[in-house]
Length: 99
Image 1 (cartoon, rainbow, N blue to C red):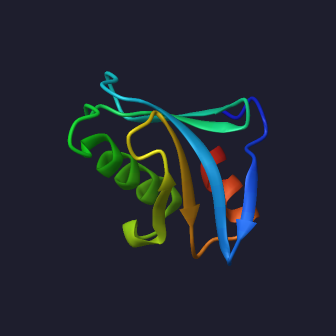
Image 2: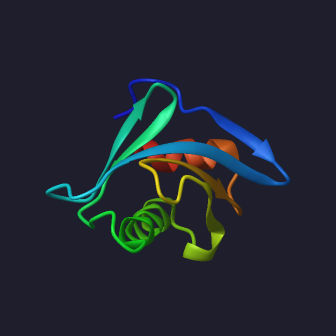
């Protein structure tokens, strides 16, 4: 459930937003928004890109888009990441995240 507004920028035809991940969670889940960032729980550990791969898989499934439509712009080695999405408009992104 959304409890805050997700901050979304539009750059070069892509939607860009921030995510805070919680690796090694008991289950994968998109938790909602806190402080303008999407919070995502991931079962994968933050080792050798496993959490990043799992994050992309979770988001692509949730948003109904291919994994290649998602790019980690920054934060590959951090819990806070900046993500770019192609192929969606702002309202579609928000609608998918609310469901």
